Image 1 (cartoon, helix red, strand yellow):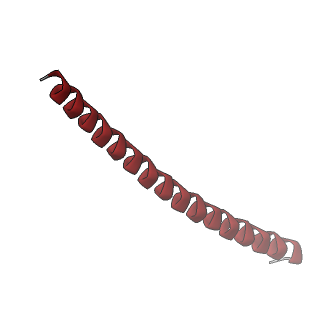
Image 2 (tube, rainbow, N blue to C red):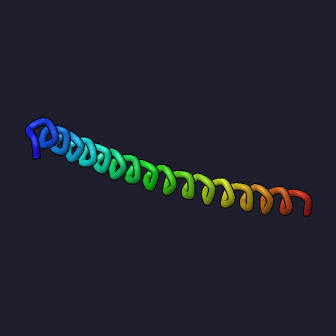
Amino acid sequence: MSELAARLAAHQRQEIAALERSVAIYRGLADKYERKLADAKQLYETEMISNNDTADSNEA
């Protein structure tokens, strides 16, 4: 393998490693925000049920 080809291969390995790290970071962030979204939806649904129960008891 020529020196140029070896340098190119080394650069490509570094680029792949950097992309793999980026993917791992963004996957972690996506997981974090998906959990936050699920928590927010659950809180919203709980509040809506609570508000409906309060409205029903006020009507009674």
